[in-house]
Length: 204
Image (cartoon, rainbow, N blue to C red; front, side, top):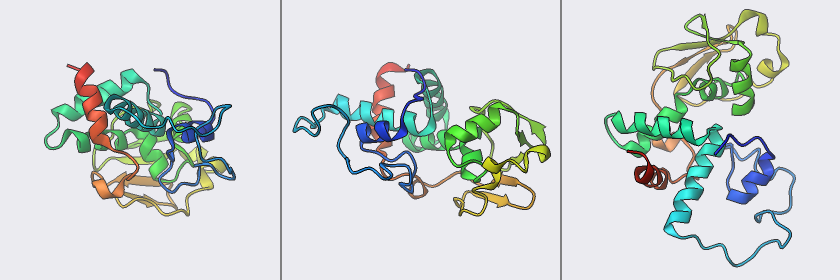
């Protein structure tokens, strides 16, 4: 599965899921809340166990902008970590550089955050890093390159509230990954256990 680059609203309707935890991007301004298609809502919506696992995997892949290869790599990392594999998988996803750039409000979406990283606007511990998938360690500092401080994309969201596992200095355009997130701080629309069950069948 390649990374999805199409309509966010269409994909959100298909999975009946908000890509952002605050729902701002889910069906914004739309009246139709059923899945897309010419026949509209149908009664054939009950999923098998396999179907539920697939949908939950697609939700996470859609939210974090991953393809299957990247997802499998993170699952292998989560399995090697101590504790619950399902929680560890979410922690690994949240530890990605592009996700933390988004969490620190340097970008309005994870897509935009990935673009900032790709275009070398982001520093990790003072050094340039253009790999969105790199996993950040607790205590690492993420900052916006000084020449990029005036970018409208960067400045637009700095005043928004941030999650509690990052600390941001808006004046310095810098933030720190202070701790791993707890489960209640992440999306409640995801059943990560189904995702672990899905990958347990195909990843050895």
